[in-house]
Image (tube, rainbow, N blue to C red; front, side):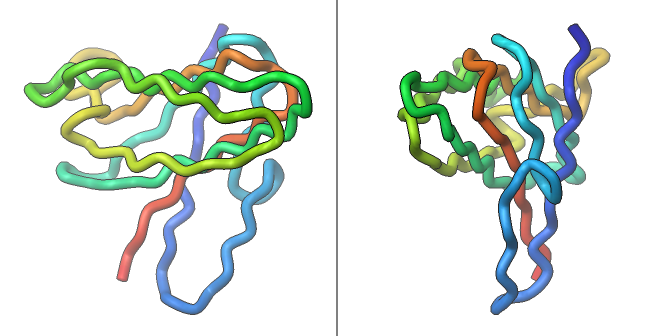
Amino acid sequence: MARKTLTPTTIVDNGIFYEIDSTTNGLAVSANNDEFEFVFDQRDDKYILFANNANSSTDATLTVYKGDGVFGGADAVLTVPKGESGIFALDSGRHMFVSGTDKGKVIIKCSLKDDVTLSVFTKQF
Protein backbone atom coordinates (compact mmCIF):
# COMPACT_ATOMS: atom_id res chain seq x y z
CA MET A 1 0.00 0.00 0.00
CA ALA A 2 1.39 3.40 -0.95
CA ARG A 3 1.80 6.05 1.69
CA LYS A 4 -0.33 9.17 1.57
CA THR A 5 1.49 12.49 1.59
CA LEU A 6 0.50 15.07 4.19
CA THR A 7 1.20 18.66 3.17
CA PRO A 8 2.01 20.81 6.20
CA THR A 9 0.01 24.01 6.62
CA THR A 10 2.27 26.94 7.40
CA ILE A 11 0.94 29.34 10.00
CA VAL A 12 2.24 32.68 8.76
CA ASP A 13 0.74 35.24 11.11
CA ASN A 14 -0.82 35.60 14.52
CA GLY A 15 -4.54 36.29 14.62
CA ILE A 16 -5.53 34.04 11.70
CA PHE A 17 -7.91 31.16 12.33
CA TYR A 18 -6.91 27.93 10.59
CA GLU A 19 -9.75 25.50 10.04
CA ILE A 20 -8.87 21.83 10.30
CA ASP A 21 -10.70 19.40 8.06
CA SER A 22 -10.01 16.64 5.57
CA THR A 23 -10.69 18.77 2.50
CA THR A 24 -8.52 21.83 3.13
CA ASN A 25 -5.46 20.74 5.08
CA GLY A 26 -5.84 17.19 6.31
CA LEU A 27 -6.11 13.65 5.05
CA ALA A 28 -8.65 11.07 6.07
CA VAL A 29 -7.53 7.57 6.95
CA SER A 30 -9.14 5.08 4.58
CA ALA A 31 -7.69 1.69 5.58
CA ASN A 32 -6.44 0.01 8.75
CA ASN A 33 -2.72 0.71 9.18
CA ASP A 34 -2.67 3.45 6.53
CA GLU A 35 0.70 5.18 6.46
CA PHE A 36 1.28 8.90 5.95
CA GLU A 37 4.43 10.88 5.33
CA PHE A 38 5.53 14.47 5.14
CA VAL A 39 8.84 16.19 4.53
CA PHE A 40 10.61 18.35 7.08
CA ASP A 41 11.79 21.46 5.21
CA GLN A 42 14.85 22.11 7.36
CA ARG A 43 16.97 20.58 10.06
CA ASP A 44 15.84 21.35 13.60
CA ASP A 45 12.25 21.89 12.47
CA LYS A 46 9.29 21.40 14.77
CA TYR A 47 5.80 20.58 13.56
CA ILE A 48 2.43 19.90 15.18
CA LEU A 49 0.43 16.80 14.25
CA PHE A 50 -3.32 17.24 14.74
CA ALA A 51 -5.42 14.07 14.92
CA ASN A 52 -9.21 13.97 15.00
CA ASN A 53 -10.95 10.68 15.80
CA ALA A 54 -14.63 11.17 14.99
CA ASN A 55 -15.30 7.45 15.48
CA SER A 56 -17.79 7.08 18.32
CA SER A 57 -16.89 3.53 19.34
CA THR A 58 -13.15 2.90 18.87
CA ASP A 59 -9.91 4.59 19.93
CA ALA A 60 -7.32 5.25 17.22
CA THR A 61 -3.65 4.40 17.67
CA LEU A 62 -1.06 6.49 15.84
CA THR A 63 2.52 5.34 15.54
CA VAL A 64 5.07 8.01 14.64
CA TYR A 65 8.11 6.06 13.57
CA LYS A 66 11.43 6.97 15.11
CA GLY A 67 13.90 8.58 12.77
CA ASP A 68 17.19 6.91 11.98
CA GLY A 69 19.34 9.77 13.25
CA VAL A 70 21.28 10.00 16.48
CA PHE A 71 18.21 11.14 18.48
CA GLY A 72 15.80 8.59 16.95
CA GLY A 73 15.09 6.72 20.17
CA ALA A 74 11.83 4.77 19.94
CA ASP A 75 8.59 4.98 17.98
CA ALA A 76 6.01 7.29 19.57
CA VAL A 77 2.70 5.45 20.07
CA LEU A 78 -0.26 7.76 20.65
CA THR A 79 -3.86 6.98 21.48
CA VAL A 80 -6.58 9.30 20.22
CA PRO A 81 -9.70 8.42 22.24
CA LYS A 82 -12.99 7.83 20.45
CA GLY A 83 -14.77 11.07 19.64
CA GLU A 84 -11.78 13.26 20.55
CA SER A 85 -8.96 15.27 18.99
CA GLY A 86 -5.40 15.89 20.05
CA ILE A 87 -2.09 17.41 19.07
CA PHE A 88 1.43 16.04 19.18
CA ALA A 89 4.72 17.91 18.77
CA LEU A 90 7.02 16.44 16.12
CA ASP A 91 10.74 17.14 16.26
CA SER A 92 13.09 16.53 13.34
CA GLY A 93 15.80 15.09 15.58
CA ARG A 94 13.54 12.40 16.96
CA HIS A 95 11.22 11.58 14.05
CA MET A 96 12.94 12.45 10.77
CA PHE A 97 14.76 9.90 8.64
CA VAL A 98 18.21 11.20 7.68
CA SER A 99 19.21 8.55 5.16
CA GLY A 100 17.82 6.10 2.62
CA THR A 101 14.72 6.42 0.47
CA ASP A 102 12.81 8.15 3.30
CA LYS A 103 15.45 10.83 3.88
CA GLY A 104 13.87 14.03 5.19
CA LYS A 105 10.52 12.38 5.93
CA VAL A 106 8.41 11.61 8.97
CA ILE A 107 6.22 8.50 8.73
CA ILE A 108 2.99 8.02 10.68
CA LYS A 109 0.75 4.92 10.80
CA CYS A 110 -2.89 4.87 11.96
CA SER A 111 -4.53 1.68 13.24
CA LEU A 112 -8.12 2.75 12.60
CA LYS A 113 -9.63 3.14 9.16
CA ASP A 114 -12.83 5.08 9.82
CA ASP A 115 -13.41 8.68 10.85
CA VAL A 116 -9.79 9.72 11.52
CA THR A 117 -8.28 12.86 9.99
CA LEU A 118 -4.63 13.90 10.29
CA SER A 119 -3.19 17.38 9.69
CA VAL A 120 0.32 18.81 10.11
CA PHE A 121 1.18 22.42 10.94
CA THR A 122 4.36 24.48 11.10
CA LYS A 123 4.94 28.14 11.84
CA GLN A 124 6.73 30.90 10.00
CA PHE A 125 6.77 34.22 11.83
